[in-house]
Image (cartoon, rainbow, N blue to C red; front, side, top):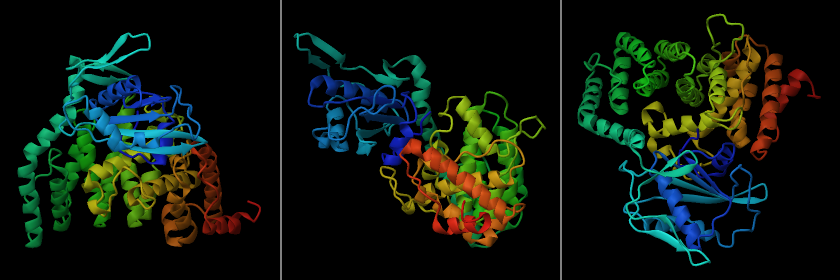
Length: 499
């Protein structure tokens, strides 16, 4: 599994290099777009990728086994890989629009082109509009695709569209149509809830429902929070938690629980925020064997809430999210954190490689980017375009910091097994540094996150987690170097100068 989030930055490239070719990822050792053969095969790959939601990536300069293939300087003309030019090449052979984003990166003395190909906005696959063929040196004509062909990506190959593909291809389109059908009603609901709050009305007479659009649901939640009564909110949490066991309802129910929790945190309604987090954990604990995808969905949302807690400086919630032992039934092997259990379960199910990369972080950022109601503190205008991840991206950076703090809390406070894995080691260290700095410099934050640990124990955890992150970073280009100075002083003061 890869996270198709539209990013083409170097950190995204490093993430993609940790996985093998699959439905949404294609490797090409080389690509000479001056030849008809390579041009047509690239178009076939690109269109097949675009036709399979949510799109995907092509990496040029990578062998099938993931090794780098093109030493720096091999590409004679990098401008040929400009996104606009690639889009023009594809459009010659299809009826429909295409928006290609690309960047050329240098990694370990090699150059790699990272090409992002998003799914069509109308949700429908497009056919080829003309014959694509080239002539070999011996004069033989080779047909790559024909007019009217509809190709889709399946695993690491391109196949003709079959009946079995339609459910997947139309799933997102059907969801969008349902949302559009509700848009007018939900807009009225949101306006009503807003008006009642402005007029000092009581609880909004609007039932909370998982089918509501996110924005309308958020407005209804705020009305309930302002009413001073959480009865309806608790009732909804119980209903939504029960729906998590239904695969067709799961993600919608989890999104609503996450939105409710985020708004409760934002408006400092601690009791309902705690109850909401309990509901997420209860849903997680009730899942059975073989439900790694569902577990990863829940853990991804725990990261969303953890990042919000970082931005709001709600350190007790960071502790609460991180330190929830699983399983709860007294089995011999108990993980100190459900987060670590979810990561291990996902790795065992081949959803992503074991202890490789920050895919939970990327998935959580996609969720927040696409669903504003999960980030009530960050307006759309402050969310940068995913094409190039900014160094000051508030969402991504707070996710990295939550990842580090969860590892620190488990290392210091965990009473069971399974130390945290620092997934943020796949990213630049400066995104995570504030996590180490707040632990070292803020006594109140330290007390909230480590209520049972003395400062020596916290310093030991800091050393352990940083050493692990630095070691893991070597597999991603080595962008970790040393603890921030304030953290170094904290460790030296409590463990001695030789540490």
